[in-house]
Length: 255
Image (tube, rainbow, N blue to C red; front, side, top):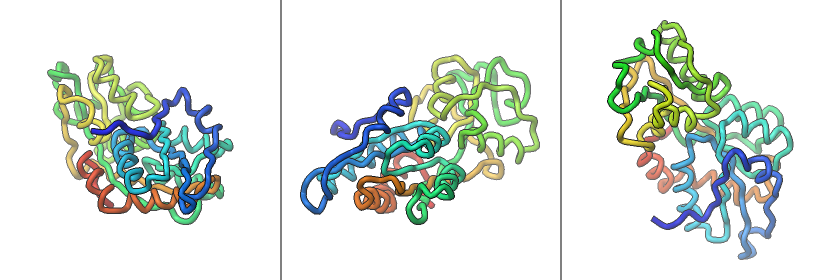
């Protein structure tokens, strides 16, 4: 697979990256422009691939992907950070930006995800379902309450009528999953897409359909965008056939 041309920045470099605005003329002139895309951490793999496909179709547009938890990205925009697009793992943080005048037009839901339980290789604590997580465990890893995956995790326990257990509060789904992958936690609840992308050594325990959720991913052009036409083209691309094929390959559902 070709190397990804878009630069992918960690949360450590987030503030610096967002403070640097892109420059360049419109795609119509034939000169290059760059769009900065703020995206939920759970979109890391799939957006990296979608951006490659987008750049192949729009060779004069470079994408720069910046991944972190949705609330972190939302706060950065509200604090004045410069970017062109925001893709959230739920509607809440997108709505916050929309109500604050930071989103142009109506955000579009381009993907849907679900949650699953993952346990350490060999499942040493014998987890068979959600009820097992409600009891006593050596260590559980969940997303923090303000992060979309943390909200969904808590919703699942409420739907099941189970007590919410003590667990770590991780900044995003990648950090949550890594706790289990590296043996620092017995189990976690993460997005299906992340569970399947990390390692076949982990054991996935599906949640019953009646307890699971449908996590919607909206994307919108930021009012602060330097290149709104190129940003709008990326939104349209995520809603198209090529992106749909990539999303499905990574385990996402379509809206």
